[in-house]
Each structure stands twice: as C-alpha cells, then as structure tokens.
Image (cartoon, rainbow, N blue to C red; front, side, top):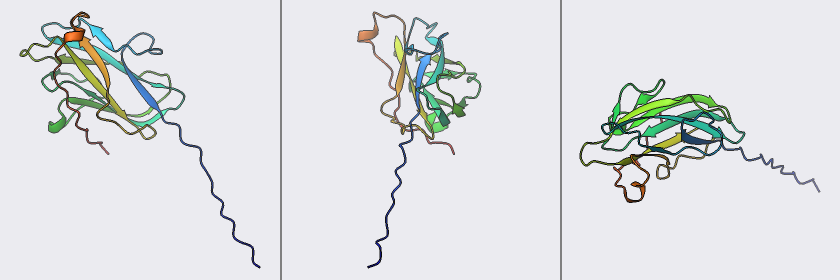
Length: 173
C-alpha cells in the first residue's frame, strides 16, 4: 500500500504588536505618561507639547499618528513640523507619518496651540490621540488615548467638555 502523504503545517509565532503611548512632553518620557495639564489657558487659548513613545521591545513600522481637538475648538497655526492638516471632513485632526519608531525612544515634541470656543465657555478639554502602524493592533476610534487640559484641578469632576468627533480618519496610502 502506498505511503500516505504527510501534511506538514508550520506554525509561525504570533508577530509581536507595537504599542504607542502619548503624553504631554516631559524630560524623561519613560514611566507613566503625563496626561493632565493644569492652567495652561490664556484668553481661552493654550499651547501644549505632545510626544509619543513605543513601549515594550517591538519597533512600530509605518506609523500614522492623529492628534484630534474638540469640534468647536480651532487650531492656531503653524502646525508642528511634519504634521499635516486634515481634509475638510477632518479639519479637527493633525496627522503625521513616521516610517519607524524605535522602542523607548520618544518622538520629537510637537507643540500644538488650540483656541477654545468663546461661547459656551469651557474650562477644560481633552485632546484625543490615535495611531496605526503595520504591526500595531487596529485603531479603535471609540477608545482614544486622551490628554486633558483644565484651568483647575477642582473643576475636573464637574466639567463640561466640548464634544469630540469619533469618526475614523481615512488612512492615507
């Protein structure tokens, strides 16, 4: 009787996923991210510095980063170096493409200036941060990383926040 052909199945180890964490820029970007800025507002306008860092030991490849402001807020130009304005449907986004981010090395600080609406007068807002990359988990547009900007710590529990869109940004090819 002829020998049965053997089926050889090769199982590849699951590719490690890269993970990126956003923070207000600080001298040492390792450790816990800095996600709250108190009292940076001047005449309902504020400037913040944001950086991102790959945590773990897997570099992130073909990275797209989106920084999103509230719907009623306005970006104050210029954009940080490398960041592009969104299209007319996504004018609340600023995005950048980075070919590779090494683990535990922070991106250059990106300084964003945002004008809050005059009316209604808000005392805080969140800045939403998203990313995608070739070897990252898919973007969940409903679960951003949020960075908070507030006039005072006491106001936090009872704040009214301007709304922020959660519609996906089209991925640029």
